[in-house]
Image 1 (cartoon, helix red, strand yellow):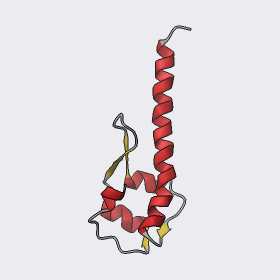
Image 2 (cartoon, helix red, strand yellow):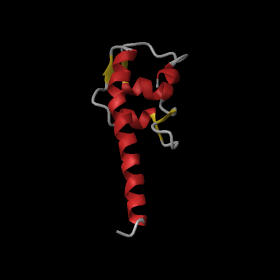
Image 3 (tube, helix red, strand yellow):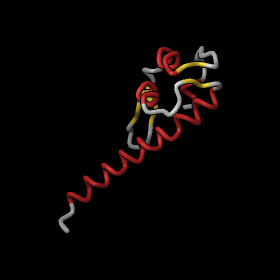
Image 4 (cartoon, one colour):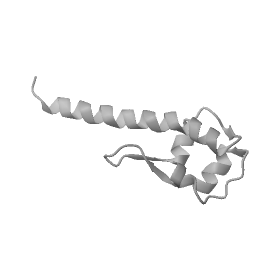
Length: 86
């Protein structure tokens, strides 16, 4: 996510709507398999709607990206288990 924020014109403090307007369309990879989530989607489930700094934004979105990664991993494991006849 740090690399995605480089070169953006976000002035902090910023609201989720301002961030969504600037970089909401940006896809952030969640795992090596290529699953991703947009910044706009991550902001929808974030706990804050106003960010005093870039670091606060990163800290708030990190758990959202981690949950997405865990969801895709769990889904993949569930699918693989369904293929094994035990």
